[in-house]
Length: 317
Length: 317
Image 1 (cartoon, rainbow over the protein chains, first blue to last red):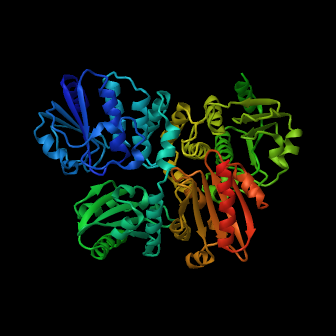
Image 2: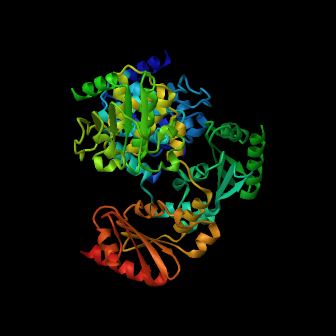
Image 3: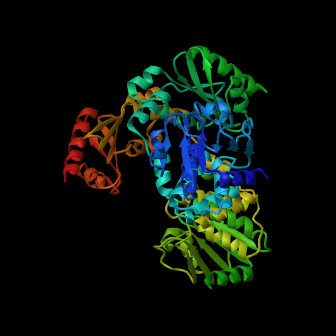
């Protein structure tokens, strides 16, 4: 069984590097910080690395400061969490090519199985569910910090236990994390009830741009470069904004376009029937059936036209 | 053990009436509809009654139509759920006085133990957790409808598993309800993720007006008459908007002013230390320490000046 092979590699390794994807979310950061703290209990050198900015909203995570900038380490083992394809590792991609053993631990159906050991459990609602199993299989303690990290990962990747991906196992693990000291009320306050002033201003800009298409089946929002400039925000403030479009009554597909230099970042959400992973894949992106993204070259007007065309086509199927 | 006494009374009774409190919430309605469906599996007559309107947002609950208006039934047993005092039963209070056996099943610490049998478990995050145990002790099936009802009760009474009252037992039960078919994604969608398009546009307007005062201790937003006109909204769309101001990091007092004819509606929220009830009282309004409101004559500029002065004074105390 591949998970046990990974456990054995962890036991054998002296130096372990933990990696995750660009534009890290709660699952990436919660899993990495939790695994970092758990593996530090073994007599090994452990490093964690994500080649991107860490969203300010996750600064409360225990050990978040251990996820450091590019480093120069020779590791025996790279554990890559929540990363569907190696291209999403950024600078760490080069690194895993030189690492003797690589393990790709994920729950995305789109995972390209790019590592030596690939453990992809699409039944897991969050990669942290698999990380939890790894910690259990290693016989390590779930302390307050590990529990708070994993709980954050699960809470965010299940939208507060509301996404279809949530299972009784998700709740079982959440209950166990609570029993082990997860500061779940704090996490919820930070993740759901905490808003930065400039993020609020950016949300206001996005909502001002909100339009419905196709009799309200599609909601569209856009954020222009000037919105970032005038509100003092950047890409790290985007999280959840597209959800407002998705939550509107009657909407099936929500789009958020974000203007960058010569290209546009596209976030897609769907409610019941449209596979937005398929749409994002058309443009070289990916994700889940109900939440996907891609980056498309062109002006915001050009990309808007292309994306909406693709969505309208899917709605007609 | 009192819960077993209640189980025995249920087994003995031919006619059972299920009751809950006025202004019913998700726990009252989810528990009653779930117990109704579960007890109907026994060869008994079961009735459910709440002396109040059922909020539109809970119309999706299975068997919600079985909670009927005042009735004329002679029952052997009244099971009263989630009701801390009999005064909150409305017309049903009179009824329980004539019922041979009454059982008060609740989780509120303030429960006045008004029935013949009183089972109050303050460790339960929702009364539905106790109802779940009753169904298990009766050896009844948890079908899709019962599970969906109880899940709704738990989700709403724990604020989506975020309140401190949530325990590993809450998650254990939620997981079991999911395994028994609870339509948890639908419930979350109905309860948490539903936004009207024009409400979203109004929120955008409010956020555009957002300003901070006193080094970020006070957040200010305003909604003008033209905002209502241009977004097709009215006062019924204001719910929660002031919460965005309250949730901003560092903010202690949040103000939302709403322009009306010749007067301004003021909503106040505070986080930790300012008594906004006191401030609202100064202007003839009131509410709670952390959430209050008032209506003040004058233009928006005049009222803004007066309200902010009063808040700044309180902050200096």
